[in-house]
Image: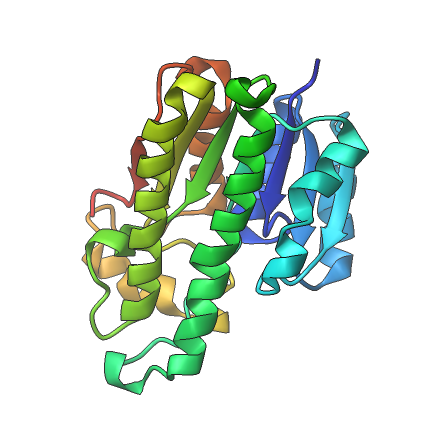
Length: 248
């Protein structure tokens, strides 16, 4: 049977690159997106051209009640899920920690931490062999900022991603015997629109000189690691964090 994978934020940036890579590898896809329906439909069409069945769900994952419906709806549509990629997230505005509004920080944690908790719980309940499931793999997209603290940039974002790292590690250890693997991919600065959303569209170019490889990553360079962690080649890998940071 073909694997069935949920990707949140699955129609832009790293999520879109991941969806395309998974489609090439034979996954059927349930892509969750917040806005820009035209882009979502384009990514879905590209994945269908590779033979994937693709279902789209437009949703604001900041609504945690709505987020609770994602996994059950995917199971209703496909009959099962084998993978979850918690990719959707925001940075908040780039700037000093003292200037970060608490309301914005609350939204960062709602989208980056609480929504993945909701989805991860639902996915584990479905996948756990101890609860009648067939096992599965969860990949949480974190950030190199989780271990740097991101001073003068986005400290609350770095805090939220550190929480995601612990979500991966804790659930990996708790549910290893239940056939559920949980891992993390931590990109460094990557060419996506997340920087423009944070008010610094040229951030990848501005940071390039501080990256040992001399450039920011491209989304496709992150997607390969996600594919690996969802696939059989990583069958003994759980609780890992793959840093894709250009040697930073």
